[in-house]
Length: 247
Image 1: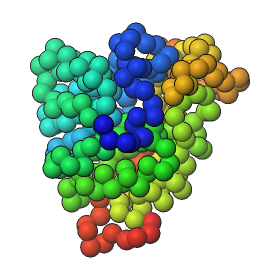
Image 2: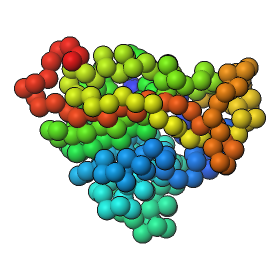
Image 3: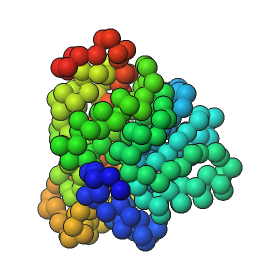
């Protein structure tokens, strides 16, 4: 397995309990993220789509159900098998792959749209250059990127992945990508507020509960926590217009 930041969170262990892992898998909401679904419904995905860090496959399943060609990649064998089972049960074709994200650089595949739904923020900051290089390798000219990440400015400081600021996104992507928008959007979870006190640090599995930082947290109709995060939509610049510094 390549030495990559995806090794630093033990995703396979998180998925070992299947879909009953509860607070260990707050991203498992039993369907696509509403923000991803809305972008898809507005025609925001095109061509061959890569769902990078696809988890249990719900976003990929929705995209494929609309007729898109979808490849979905995750490091967890358990998660990918769950996605394959869902695709089979729903008579939908998705190219699921078990792989470390960084190993895709040598795959030879090229994509027209990349979906990163809460994968980027699992990477430590030192891996960001590798990540942007990976995208450059995987993407066709004028490819589109929809990236969702926890935000330093918006997301409460409960246990979980690192937060990323808007300036950090612009610094990381602005030289090679034409950033169309960085906007606040809602990220749904499977956690009721009281479950946050039972959350664990995903790297250590030790309880690291917040105190009062959910006092004004949004709750959805199912009674689960909803967080503000960043959505960045960007288009890969033509090779000749890319620069060494962010635009």
